[in-house]
Image (cartoon, rainbow, N blue to C red; front, side, top):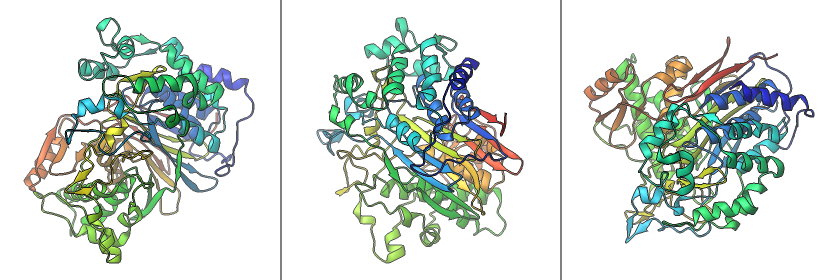
Length: 579
């Protein structure tokens, strides 16, 4: 694996001075004493990111390098054919920036595109269809973030992924496991291109195999030379459109959809939670739920005279249930729907919402921030939505040697996306993140498909600041709808229960959305929590495994502490402040 670092080092020795840009804010050049750190979902990608930091790169540079490698070595989770949300903290300017690289619905989509005789299409059929493919945003996000913050030349950032794609990477046990489970499910083992790559000779790749991907190397080389136009225009764009429009259930993606895609620059959503300030992506991300859960937890636990373990666990569960109900009802693309994001995280609303805690056996219903804050109800605007989301997602947390930070969550939606292939990468099935049924109870659902619209996402990259406004914590996770619960576990665990990042990540996952409370009993400590919650009256569903992939960095007086989720194949690498 050191070959990645060796190649990058050689390239850097002959390079010009680091690129600097002030389009967003000045690049911080003063080293801070903590050094840098990367927490990324695969060792190859982690090493690529660490080498960028050692070379003086910005956290954004490292994120791009890492993600380009992830698209090769864990294609079940993310890649060039998907999208991402990126939060960037720029220490010198003391500012936070939000880049929305979420996929968009093609111009030919319509609200009932997934209905067959008035009923939603079966999920597998929808998932594996061309209808499911949204306009990819990842490559445009690379460009937008690098133009704003990049310190190293862009081609250098893609060099590690190109070399791995040419020379080959060692297939991991996780990739092998996914390929075995999905053989015969969906079309990954049936579509000619994906079958040849992932199932050579009809058999899934095995852990330890060396797998190259010349087509991916060629795609990245074109992007390195010509920028994103090599992706969104020309021969590669034509390949993407052809893949989407192939049978069965072809989609409507057109060359104009690709050529007109743009990253949305949004204002980060921030609010105080106790002594900290929690910041995340605004809608269509579900970042507001992180602020809500921590704020609701504080209010619910305050009701206990002496907080016992039962008080803490039930407060965490009920904070989730209340926040999930609001998220499900209100969150959608803010360019199409009036999302009351600031109202949902407002202190006055959370005070009232905490008092709407329901009996453990009951199901939480959405609140009404309009009625609470202004006496003008808004809950009837939308029908109740319980959209499901797949778990083909990854997260990376990075702090560079100048104190800048990135929290980036990227996805292709379900594992291996739509199983449609172009240029050595998989295309997303992100359109199934929209509500498949556009009306509920006669009311329109906020997260309904519309041309150009971005689907609601559970992705919740988070950056937390302490009571002095200093960078404190970077966190995030993949995991479909459970992302909200997974990330919240790290916030409550580290900030309220005084756990180390690794202890918080290792802890059993608890997911409280809808009518049941899922508890991960396949890890140490999970079974007692399940028993406790059951005794309190919660309808508990015991699970042997959860699909979290948490990556966390905490700033402490003694330096940076990192954590990688043992449920996946992540790695934490510390980079010294000086070499």
